[in-house]
Amino acid sequence: MSTATLQAEAVLAAGAGVGECPVWDDETGTLIWLDIPAGRVHRFDPRAGTDTFISAGQPVGSVALRELGGIVLALRDGFGLLDPGAAEVRLVRAVELDVPENRMNDGKCDAAGRFWAGTMAFDSRPAAGTLYRLEPDLSVEPVLSELTISNGLAWSADDRTLYFVDSGAHGIDAFDYDLERGSIANRRRIIDIPPEDGLADGLTIDADGCLWVAVWNGWTVRRYAPDGELLAVAELTTARVTSCTFGGDRFDELYVTTAAEGLSPEQRLTQPHAGDLFRIRPGVRGLPARRFGG
Image 1 (cartoon, rainbow, N blue to C red):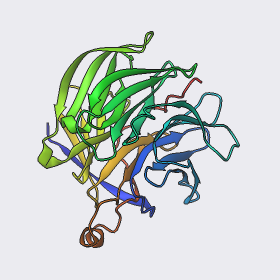
Image 2 (cartoon, rainbow, N blue to C red; image 1 turned 180 degrees about the vertical axis):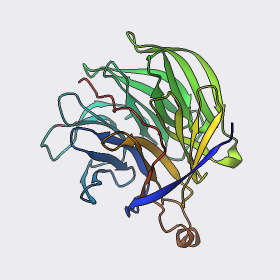
Image 3 (cartoon, rainbow, N blue to C red; image 1 turned 90 degrees about the vertical axis):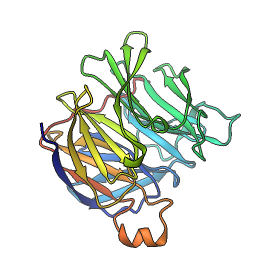
């Protein structure tokens, strides 16, 4: 089967340092997304073409919707909540305060309402990160250690498989998943991305069970079958592609975040859309975001 080539359009001139973790809010028809180093939680309305933000007060790595309204966040210092109508984020569970050189990174919710998010070192040194599980009762458990950059997550439709990216491991792994216990087992590599092609970053899954992965320094978002076959490549006009999610009224639009941080002045001139928000019309549909139960 030949690999399809898709194109992306820039839809918001955001200029984010590190855009990350887009989440479609199907109740409001808006996209929540983050600028990690700026500590900003954005909300983009594609119909109005407007974007607003609040400050989390510290670097923020990931976000998920809550069943009771508001959002849950993975912050530099741990897990936080933003209640409906509130203007300030409150830290509810500290994580790794004894490791100030670390921060929290990407995260996502499972079907039982748990929020999974991991850590990484600010300098991305190997084996510094840990993947954590925040339960709806706000208890926290470490699940997987010695990670370099704990990153994208996605679950299969039957919730029996967790897909996970440690960017330092150059690919996507799969685990057997026990939804009742929130436990993982039988780690295996399903997709390799050679270092010269970039680093696997944020991850989402479509209604056909195929994986979409943003490739940092790879200028692309790639679609893979669960068996590892490359099905499609969406090309962007900037190198540092960070994450993606499905949105729109029919979940047939793929929104993509990117980063400008670390680019040289010369690179910025040739990549004027670095840090902007992109959209792809991939011809397939995604699924609604799962919400945190706490």
